[in-house]
Amino acid sequence: MVFVGMDHGTTGVSFTILGDGAEHFKIGREELSAGRVSALEELEGRVSPEEIELMAITYAMGDGINRIKPIDRVKNRGIISIGGAGKVTGGGTAVYSEIESSGIPTVLIPGLHRNTPCLDERFRAAYSHHASPEKVSICYNAYLETGWENMIVSDISSNTVTMLIQDGKIRGAMDACIGAMGVIHGPLDLEMLRKIDDGEKTANECFSHAGAVKIAGIDTRVSRARDELLDMYLEGRKEAALALETMIMTIAMEIWGLAGISERVDGIVLTGSMGAMREPYDFHGKLADMVDELAPVKRLDATSGSMGSAQIARDIHGGKRDILGIEVDI
Image (cartoon, rainbow, N blue to C red; front, side, top):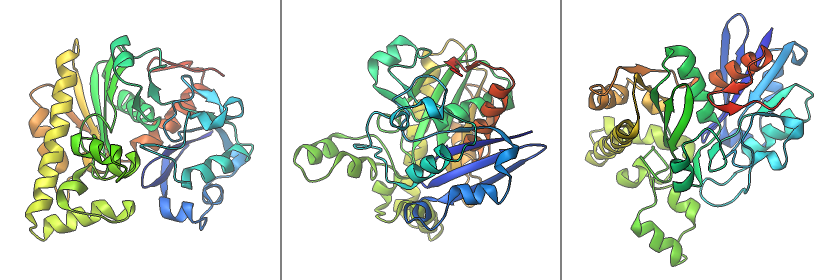
């Protein structure tokens, strides 16, 4: 039997084909947005659709649903809005439409938001949105890999989102626009709010330049930002070193903060393209050193999002009806 997982990320769409082993591939955001690549054709080149028992996918903010549901029972692709901070840009939409019309049995994973029942009511009261759907997949992969019932999971790449799991359920999360910095995205500070009020920039323009790129002075394509930051660091540019160090500091603050309100922390999981990075900059090691006195730290590969989605598909097919506190309505 074959199961497929999809992770709709900032820089592209990633897939995992889970059978006897696991095969991963990623299609860049720019190729998808320009229509130069068909995700379905790429998938069919690796596995016959008839072999796929179930696919689990993520899309955008996932704030229009609060249960895992078959794609044919989801309205408006499971989102409330396509605008604002974190707006939809088109590449993932094309992939969603391809999958929706493919006939492959598919479920859609929700994001974490104020209507997610498993979240602590105080998180739901404090924030309207907590994490996009691939973070649920990442948490599930972390849960299966570690066996930890109580943990903090931080996904660090273009943005940083950190989740709190207690007694095997997702109880809280800090979204990219309110907590720690990622490479591209980060929290909106006073200066940015003023620019939005004054009409100088949109919310999404500010959000998409509030991460490490703000400190390093980088203004380039999303797909190039991380590499440019690392190139600057390797050239000895002080602003790049400061950007990376500041990003790590804000993430450590977020992890320590969640640990402070948790009942117990069995371990901490760091993942994402930056969270798992050891070369050419030991981001994982530097951050682990700042939080390892809280609990043991485990590194997961940057494929944890699509892998977790595939594992969700496999386990739903096997009869599981609850994923870390999120109901499966199938």
